[in-house]
Amino acid sequence: MRLRDRLGLWHYRLADDWPWRALARSAQRRRRALGPLIERLPPVAVSDDARVEVHVLSGDAQADLGVVSSWSLLRFLSGASLVVHSDGTLSGASQARWRARVPGVRFVSEDEARAASQRLLEGLPEVARWHARNWAAQQTVDFSACARAPRLLSLDTDVLCFQPPRAVLDWLDAGAAPARWNRDLGTRYSAPLDVLKAATGLELPERLNCGFMLTPRFGRDDFERLERALRGMSRAGLDMNQLWSSQTYLAVMAAHHPGAAALPAAYDVRRGPTRPDEVVRHYVGMPSVRFRLFTEGWPRVFAQAGLGDAAR
Image 1: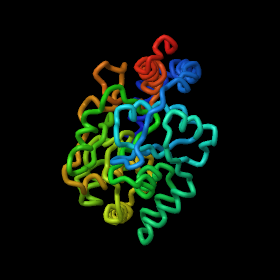
Image 2 (image 1 turned 120 degrees about the vertical axis):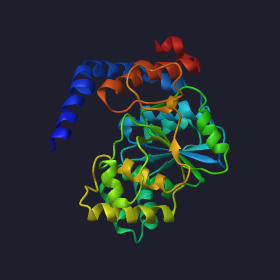
Image 3 (image 1 turned 45 degrees about the horizontal axis):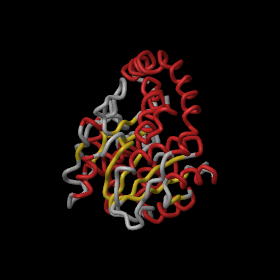
């Protein structure tokens, strides 16, 4: 490991990990205490003829997060549908719980998604090889492979929406659909931007986070462009399966669409307490941030649903 990487790891441990572990444990107790309120959320309607599909990847361990996350967003989106992709562990009980809050949700099994993606990626060996090896590739490839609507909103289970997402609504009403995303704390890709540019010839956007991302439904042309980029990265000796590879490859595809840009600051990934003006918050997996999903985010959503007294 390079010195810069070692220093970055120690900074993360000291600033975002070790001091927050006790709060992370107490937040899990809060999660269990609030869980029964999920059954009291009023059902939200989805559209059979959707102009945008909200796609979520979830397993059984994240299903409660996914129900609250998708409910928090869909209450503000008309003409939307919900598609939940199983990571192979999503149980029938969790699906029933989700369906009770979002009647009309469509579930996609791991086998169904794999078959659709294999058809889409036929003749693209670099992308297909990565897709077969990396769980996060389901978000990059499977969402588009299984989509029925022309526009997608990719939603992580640790994202909450607190007020009408005006930027999303404007994007839906616009004629074109260039990619939009919430900005990350930093640029987290497979390699530094200059190295990626040398390997792919592309100017990738900075700080793209794929936890809340709006895209057109990516088609064969998009994945052919990604195949060419991956070949360049392979020739450069880059790690094709690096931790941030999915986010990197979504940035590659976004770079090919004119007008692609970050969402406003009220959608940014951030540290610190949840602010009143935040529209969307991605409570990323760092211990310094994630605990706030259950101590601040869930209570706010439940209070907005009229369950405030029970959420205290």
